[in-house]
Amino acid sequence: MVAGADGQALVALDRETQFHPFTAIADQQGNGALVMARASGSSITDVSGKTYLDGAAGLWCVNVGYGRAEISDAIHRQSLELPYFHSFNTVANEPSIRLSERLLKLAPDGMRRVFYGQSGSDANDTAVKMLWSYNMLRGKPEKRKIISRSYAYHGVTAAAGSLSGIPMVHQNFGLPLDFARHVSRPDFYRDAPARDCATEESYSAFLAQELEETILTEEADTVAGFIAEPVMGTGGVLPPPAGYFEAIAKVLDKHDVRLVADEVITGFGRVGAWFASELYGIEPDLIVTAKGLTSGYLPLSAVLVGERIWSVFEEASRDGRPFAHGFTYSGHPTCAAAALANLDILEREKLVERVAAMAPSFRSYFAETLLNLRLVGDVRSAGFMMGVELVADRATKAAFPASLKVAGRVALSARRRGVLVRALPNSDVIALSPPFVVTEAELSRLAETLRDAIDEVTADLVREEHL
Ligand code: PMP
Image 1 (cartoon, rainbow, N blue to C red):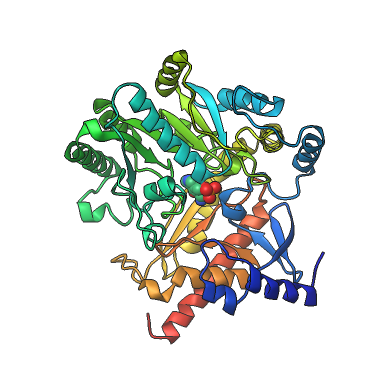
Image 2: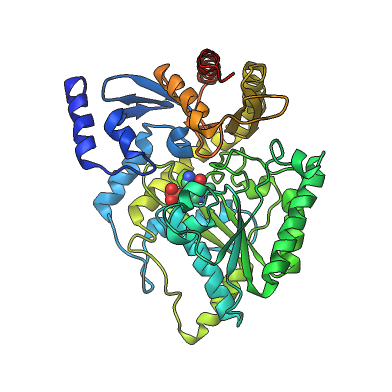
């Protein structure tokens, strides 16, 4: 344990040495990093000794909570026995084989094989290359474009970053690459009124029509896939409007376009089902997973490959050509052992069922606590994923100028009060995604602290004459 003066020394050393992801260098140099030291359950403690309730489960990933000796023991045992070996050229290891069997049993029907990587981003790049290869193998090399949605987050590598629809991920990188297209996000609260859609169903029909028009404009012979997070996460925590995936599926089938479900956040219980695809009746051709697969204890991603795509690869490989894609760490035995222990915990403690059972009261308690506040325009959720949208005017839904960083200020106030929540990058939405083991008392504290933080920022905005 490091504390006090040592903590300050670490902050100073961090300033001099580390290049942080998604961090303004001026902020790192000015405020300095929040250096974390240890964690247990839903709580995390920094090097100064201050403990926070982690309302975000890291980055939507520490689903079974911190300090699970069972996962650490599995990692320890496996790394003594066989810490690493690759999976190229028909080599395998027991943990990754056992994990594949288990994933195919848990997954929605129709999934045939599992392909491993290490992060959500690389898994989405793998999905893109699978779609490209699939179409080349079936004699449709022009069918390469992939349609995503504005404000989607699919990661940051060159292909996944192109599919992401968050402007910050594109700016200063010259992205997206030219295979990617974007249609509208499904934001019933903010976007449906502007489309004159009074019901979720009519909004879904509008979005499906927009998708079809895009496919026709691009020409269906050039469109390989459509990718969607079942519940959009970083783009605002947007559960799909009623009928959305049914309407989309009809369009995709009609134009021979494959569906990729990016379940990097939603997979393994976050929405109260093992996969959000089950919950929303989605029948994907590829399912992309990471985060909750190991609850973040070690990096691991898995792309589940459905029948339509697998059968083409299987057929094509008869002439001996390999799928020439994969990573040094594909099928990493120690990461797979961590995933198996994580799945054991989820199953034994019935944590997915727990999320499903607690979700209605989670939503109603937060709605009761927050919806009467002047700044809160919307509270929406799916399972243990919640978005609280802050607005300048609840009647018109007018947003605050981005320069005021209202959600960021609320998140900082909550942090001072000992609670971690995330301010999403492109709107004033606060995201909550607690570990599945969070207690009722911790959820109350989360809601009440968020209310106090919003009250503090509201008073500041009034004083600054922004309200
Ligand atoms: N897809 C989704 C839906 C995500 O939320 C994320 C990460 N937040 C990613 C992909 C990228 O995952 P990673 O950061 O592990 O590359």
